[in-house]
Length: 110
Image (cartoon, rainbow, N blue to C red; front, side, top):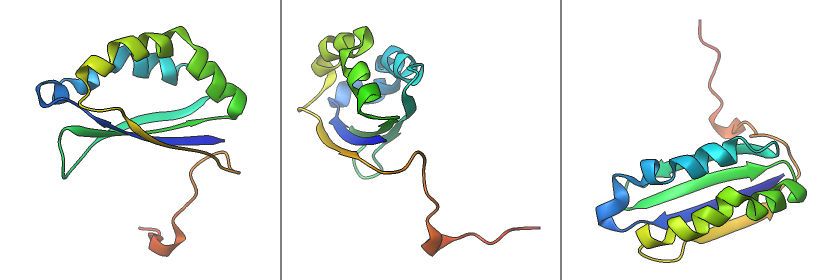
């Protein structure tokens, strides 16, 4: 899979509305056949920073995402709300889903 993490520093006046601002882009991306997940989190230390964790089935699915109409629209509509260019980590990972964190295994309950 293609695993991507990106940090978006949002202008303070737009930070509380960021989930609403990105809603159409988020819904359209999640609907892509090659999308595995597309999840936003807000920073605990910096409420103006959002972290996007996303994954695509493979490079072809990731490429289709970047070529999509909703990605091109986001390239136009999202930057005016940002304080800086987002930072990204993008890599191919030889797995298809999340792995369990064995070092913090939770015993079965009940």
